[in-house]
Image (tube, rainbow, N blue to C red):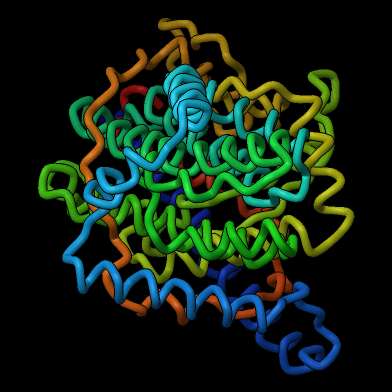
Length: 423
């Protein structure tokens, strides 16, 4: 009993110290960013943004919206009206894309690889690289649930439901976005636009004008922003507002704890890690404060996009990592000096925060989820999302190397405090 109390006190002190360091780092980072914005805002470049193209897309989207309102149409009714208009060749393309999507939508590993393949074939599709990097982070979050620390903090049932939320979100976005990317590839091969086929895949009417415009003039930033808006709206109704997911995960205290402890980090590893190197490769990224807020998720995605493509060094090193480090879901993919894929021996009792922690490969700890029916319906019912169609700039402060290290030291201390007999 005394030993457990002593361990708990030790971990409590460590947790308080790490929490103070994190809070101090957040305040300092915020102040530095505000200061630099005041000093450098005139010199701070933003993405090339075609205002005329954005305006045309908005106007076309509004016309589609008005037509849908007049006809009381939905995604399904649009598809029914279009069925008879598709040629035999178009149906062949549709079925081929649907088959490819089903095959690649097996799990987080296959989705992440699919995004990388299509980006390397069509680098003008900026969203594909962004989706690849964010999907890697999704896989790391999934395996954290079965790794060394979170099983000591969260119950098995809550970890299972958290995995289901992450997996469902990951799968829904892929199911919606990947057909769009493949349809672009098919259009390139055919030498003509095939975007009139988008309704056959249940894609929101919101996306049609952006793909039509991209086919004429490749403004990658506008298309990427539209895809960010669309995909976050796709999961908003089907996951974030789903009563079952809200009851089991989104409203639970330990899910909220992720935001409080700065655990909702999305990181981009820069460079190629080596198991023989003791020094960590640098990380850049951002922290999402409120995962359940739609507008915040969209703004977060836009900032990540600007970060990834704005600075040549970040882009080049992130692409090097993508090509050199196959995605397994283990955090050892990027920091092998801090994480290992092998399970920790069961007789080890001391949980130091400096040794290499257990971070398993995803396929070793999670089975593939059976395919579930996708709820039909189009989220695009008004023009509220137009406000996100604005020029974006990269954040001035994005280094995450130290804060990511602190995150895992903090998590280890919290795990030791909750279960002192194991720490």
